[in-house]
Amino acid sequence: MKIFNSYTNALETFVPHRAGIVTMYVCGPTVYNYIHIGNARPVVFFDTARRYFEYLGYSVKYASNFTDVDDQIIEKAREINENELQVAEFYINAFLNDVTSLGSKTDYIQPRVTQYMSQIIDYIAELIRLDYAYVVQGDVYFRVNKIAEYGQLSNRRIDDLISGSRVEINPLKESPLDFTLWKKTSGGISWESPFSTGRPGWHTECVAMIDDIFGEEIDIHGGGTDLMFPHHENEIAQSIASHAHPVARYWMHNGRLNLDGEKMSKSLGNFIMVKDLNKDLRGFRMFLLSTHYRSPINYSEEALDVYIKEWNRIEKTVQTLFHKLDLSDSFQLDVLVEDTALLRIVADFEEAMNQDFNTPNALTAMNQLLKVTNNYLRSSQDAYLLNQNLVIFVRLLSVLGLSIDLQKLSDEDKALFRNWEDARKNKDFAQADIYRQELVKKELL
Ligand SMILES: [Zn+2]
Image (cartoon, rainbow, N blue to C red; front, side):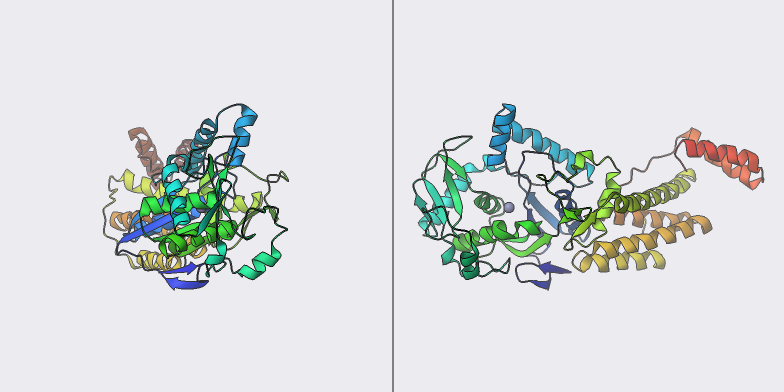
């Protein structure tokens, strides 16, 4: 399969470092607030990528962190008169609730900065020992000038960055581009270190946690485009200094989500929290996947409604298919799929996903599957074919993180279905309509 690697700026064939295993890290949230719908994009996309690797048979080791030390968390804690760890704990739980309602898996490695402090301090000490970092009055800075590759990910040149940087107000740094690995602090939560009492810098946290969890260059590092510079560039610089590799072999970045054509901004007040979306979140997931992950996506209520309707059609069709099989007690999940029309759709779906996770094209294949299914539902009584159809539908939906709760029919509901069918067979349309309305009322049709 092909993946667009932001580091080399090219579409590359994906070959994992170790056969059969994919290692992935995605920068997670700073937990001082609920997440907005723009933050949902990496949560949905990278989960879909993970699911697709699993579908292909890879074992995926996936980690995404919680930044639970940050000035904003300290500020929030002061505001509401709690300690920083309580604030972080609250928003970590809120985040995981949102992740679940977005249909993404939560069974991944979730390192928290506060639980990795000794590894982070050791990592910084090592960079100092290697002469890539220096201590000034208790602060530790990274020597960007020593990294020839600096700027490669975000396509920036060191000279341009220096001439373009704002007047440096920190005279302690050797160069304006040098970034903070450790900051001496006097207020808020802090840790003892050989450098000073203070807190680590964000860029070091991710790279030190990756180092500890994976212990080697990982396959994929993901995050939003907005993290490319300086966060990811700085992760790469530190990793080149400590391990002579740029953290990951493939860097993947998702594009931004705009709200009604404008950048979402908390300060401007134009943003929507995931928890406040108040819509079918599977429809929202489909909406997010309807645009290729690297392109920007524009959210509007109208655009979302299109996909909510689309999702409802899919859900209804799959339920109908399942009920048809359940009614004849012929439902079977371990069935060999050999129907050519279905296999053709699977091939189209895989071809789309193999092209740098082209989810819009994968959704086109799902639309085709919907048509085929409705056709089979109308024309076929063949339980084997309908089972193949159901298996494929559920399997491909699950790659996209769109799950349907297949509800078995109660005896009473089965009887209702049979009565409806009998009435239609006997051309008793008035009675048939009464049964039909009952089924609709029970949301079975
Ligand atoms: Zn990060």
